[in-house]
Length: 313
Image (tube, rainbow, N blue to C red):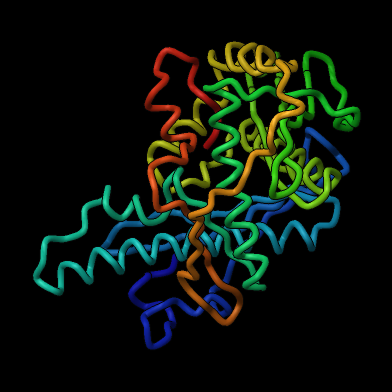
């Protein structure tokens, strides 16, 4: 247990990440025995309240998966620290405290891409990838953006399990987008993973790893890694009655409607990126669009309540 107020910190009150004793747990993914699933976690207390902060990842090499899980853990830890710092600063300045909604509009929301990485340029790129992923996922699930299967298929084959890799019919200006899905009928689990990367192989690998570790978290009843209540609720819903309807809905999005020759899905011209925190082990970057003309999953979700709820946490 780590008391937030007693953690070693720098002049900004920022926890010294390199000094935090992170606990790790690793095992083979059931969705793909070639992959190691890694969980990195700590438990922190703040103002007398305790909660876990965790990061998940998987990969063929345990060391690489460990590094990514650690980065995801630090991303969530720093995000929580920023929210608390901003709220406390507002209170100390004798102005109206920042509301949860106001803070959510800055970080940790579907309209934001966040990334922590030891290399600042990689953090900036991954934050933008995440922002564009959320835009594309919203258009696939709730709008008319179509997907098509990739020729390469995931390596897992099991009774009562359907796996697939898809890409968008329209190209993506930033790179290659891949959506991976696992529908485990026996256990009523439907999960997805997505990625944008410079090459199709990289995107496919990352999307499949994301889906595999998400399936494992459901199969083994792992605690939700998410901080926001809405994300935790969606994470819980990945196993249960919605799985079949979600699988069928994604299947309905497969096929071309003449989009192949259309202009590529572009990065917004008013894209903004901000380095929120620089630490001794990496930096946290936020990517967002400061206008209301770039819809993301949260926007589509609010406008399409008659469509089966998406599985995007």
